[in-house]
Length: 496
Image 1 (cartoon, rainbow, N blue to C red):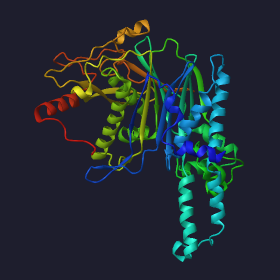
Image 2 (cartoon, rainbow, N blue to C red):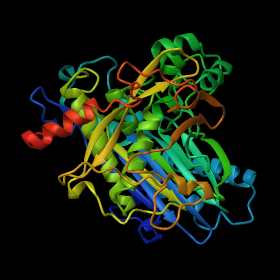
Image 3 (cartoon, helix red, strand yellow):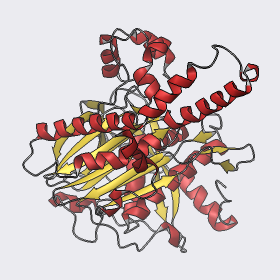
Image 4 (cartoon, helix red, strand yellow):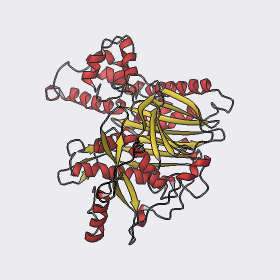
């Protein structure tokens, strides 16, 4: 069986190429890079992310896979998981429990199938290792032993590596999310009370996840020690697909050696089904590289809201979801580069592969009358942010997309169309920027922030001696950038 599956991993053409692609979806990508002191960027390794977006008579299936130490596992998952779900396994009569069972089964079968493909290589590796003297350095080996050592190095490259995954399934207009690792799913819903409800579905499987620490504690591991270590076998994720070392040799890893059974698992955390009836908005699937790039550039506190704001702004300007996704990825890439060029050089010296998948839900696209390629630019606007758990206020920087024609022009505010539930054709649920209030929550519990961009306190502001009241929004930086660009020309080139 292992031999029969190998061509699937190495072939440049896949049977999934014949599956119908979902036309409601778009994907943006950017390769990894490291910045040199002069600001130029260099790719560190081949892109290791994979994705798919398919539609069938019964369902829609989407996935983003973040590979590490190679793209073998991510490629294998993206091909074989589709086969385990779209070859008649799903139908419209399935209940929520049926769908969860099938998703769990699919992940389990695919990982086992992957390990079958490397069985022969692992057996050869074990045999060759037994022929080498223990502890000897390469230059101390005989010519024959050096050949064995070289072969071992090649085999290790062939079998190492793993992947994390986030998969979305829409069946009977219900949304199911299956997550393994550190990718992220966001659902943005435009509500009738003029708010953008941003829901992060599930949490990353890292040491910051108390449920994951509790799971590992039940296996006999020390949560405090896990927190201290943070990174296990080179990765932060406590759930992974593949990675034979942490699956079969975890007793050789000090921090995992006391576990009663496999501590690093490929079992997905599944959420759903959540009905999409009456929903207007979009679903985002993001690779860890995209999330980390935005978080290191601007901090993790508002990453979800910033991502939704960027997607909303691009959807208001462009009529093609693929172009929207790519534009957002390029914007994150630019934000990361600018942070390296300024105050966060240490944190932003590099980023991993970035993938963003956008799936619109009953969302009317723009006619593309203003797009970034037609001269639109992003200008920051500072808005006070209040957290109900804190008495202090901070500023959240949002962005306005403005044309380069002579005058300042505001986007049309169509938020009022949400009153009836669904915007009229040709209108976007947002203005040029996300113009409605935003609240965010976890799929399992509220984050506590509630509505992030709040109305001011109900008491009236007192006017000064000129009869003016303090402004709610600070446009200082906006006007500075606008004035600079229209008097001194455009900004210099970004990442090379």
